[in-house]
Length: 279
Image (cartoon, rainbow, N blue to C red):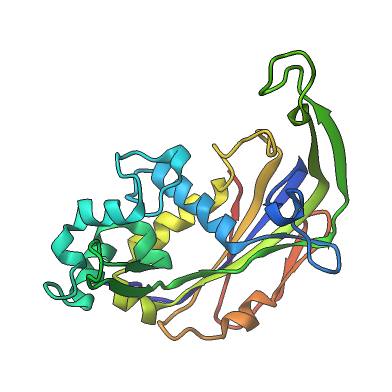
């Protein structure tokens, strides 16, 4: 299968209402913000959602979350060895380039985002393996258009999680945090040059394109109730060549998103964006 034939840039505009889109464990799980108060959702968080939606659509995923794991492997190493074979991860038996090619063929997220297969030798003093794969799909962290308003609410459990029942334990008290309402935007790009190395194809790009409008479907939790996060628009710029007519920075700057979710796109000669409604 041929690799990606044209450079692609994209943007995802989405809304958050009464939800915690990405809690910070180092800050009491409050919604992430930058120093100016703008809401932030990390690229790692967004990639997790893309992996989950890809897995829902039938794609083979290497970095599976424990909640959505569909095989019996207890670690990434076990999954790599189980699918690729132990000899593939043995540098003495399989060249790193060949091992990388096998991994890219096996898993969609490895072809898209890359992966570092870095495992120590199983036996003491044994040789380890390090196979770096750089993926063609890059995604920025998402940021809100305006500084966010965060509401914190103290909550209590009706029963202690531990103890003899004679008194309420400390775990009966807690806090929940939410972003009241905000519009976020995340940008991304796909590099045909890197796609040549992983085998990421036009079909893979179209698969990702179909996933982005429903990024938050099936992602509900107590922090993110169903319907509290929604993709409003996906903007898709497909260049006419592998090199692209413009830099990603110039393309991304043509999108001006307003606090109410409306937006304007400055036109670049020869590059017409496709505007896709959220799911």
